[in-house]
Image (cartoon, rainbow, N blue to C red; front, side, top):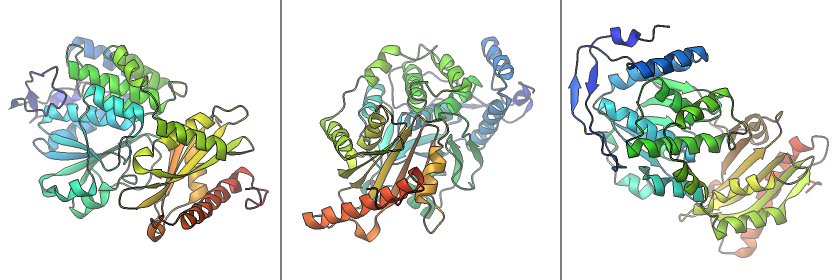
Length: 429
């Protein structure tokens, strides 16, 4: 592999930057200067060592993806983009989106990081507040006030468009998808210029760290924004690998690289964020309502507010720690201020032979358009099932209770068909 092959290409650019260490919402307004040769991804002697290291570790495909992304970004310089996250973004998605924003500033690309749901997990809130991570919540009302014609493209990070309410508006505005970067299993064929989907990698943070190692952005520990972004990436990597317990070699190598730049005290402050009373209430509900069969713990927690949605995966994290339980599934009916309701569930497993993606897709199937109601990755998964016209009308407590009982029984039935395939699942609940 020619590490300096990019240097032989013409009509490239160079950026001169004077980063402001404390400006957490930096938008990349540095002077833009065109030169006659494209700089290679790795230019300095120290960075050259990184390239040799990447080659030695068999990451030539990762480096090729970095080169491919560099060409795409060069072709879209001076544009304005949207980075779309899943409705309830996790640390992996948030940190990678921020990394992408810092990378594309070098190409005079301005991008906004957006999500439609909410940040309800205490660690996600702490991550955004303590680092100044520039993510924006676009509700349906906010979306109406936006002129989407001013954006020339969108990027999907840590998702493939199936978990974002914003995709409908983006498609209606005919904004092309420029890149899809994710570590989850392929959801559908993507008509985008750049696709980097690696289900074998435990975290999208690992993919973006490899972009950094390849030279798409040179981190500088003297720049506050770089340190905070590296800390966010470390948190995302740690979160999606269960504190590195499910990490593979590439993830460990990514963590080793980030260790040169991240702020350990800042990360510890993020991780020390306290659980809210609402989260504790949902965990208590999951304990009271759980059934345990064949080492599966299954719990319905009833109705939850939209902003408490992240209590569901936290309850699943808690239930899977019970003795003689290797897999936990927690679910509930989540409703927003417009009375739109969705059945949302999370799966956590410590069983190596259980594939969460396969399990959830087999349990709940797909809708009329072929879109699966859920999926997963190693050790974790989730599902979302819209309730359609049955949403709302819960003022009558008798009706609300009846509706929950029906959905609770149906979810259990579908799960128990896989947990106890020889039993009659209706009789087992």
